[in-house]
Image (cartoon, rainbow, N blue to C red; front, side, top):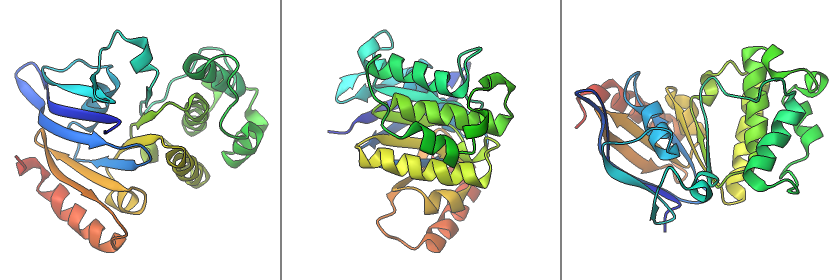
Length: 242
């Protein structure tokens, strides 16, 4: 059974359908990249999957059950990291990560990673006690990414992690942390506009265009260069996809 799925999902803003009859499923332990041109509906899709946005038809299911936005037990199975990130006011990086861990996994839960090691890998160790709001955009995003890993939900929904001001060190750490999470059976779904990044860091690639799914294919060891060329073609015609 898929961990997360949509069935005929539709979302509109006024008279415009941004998503229309979207059918997707996401399995435990896989990393899925969602691509599309600006305005294709990538962020809207994540919002619907997270239950942050309502939808106008169809449904979202978690482990076979319809997502009810009022059910805390379902909401604790997933977490959405928006492009600008978010944090608790006044908290430093360590306290912020601890709050997320307590909210998602309980006050006595141990983090699934060595916090000091990953503060060092993310380049945050020397500023770990600084309030998150005083950090640069890239540093704030890395701090919130670390908090997401400490929360360790079953479903990770991440909007544009490679366009969030992170440096190369942060992007490398993101890949390693996400792959480790997938190894624990977590499902990671992230959006991006960069075909080359998706082709080299995804188990499956989904392309959204004109409200529909233009492509939904597993990588399965395929040549990244070939996939990048395919994605360039798909994204070039995304606005005419049905």
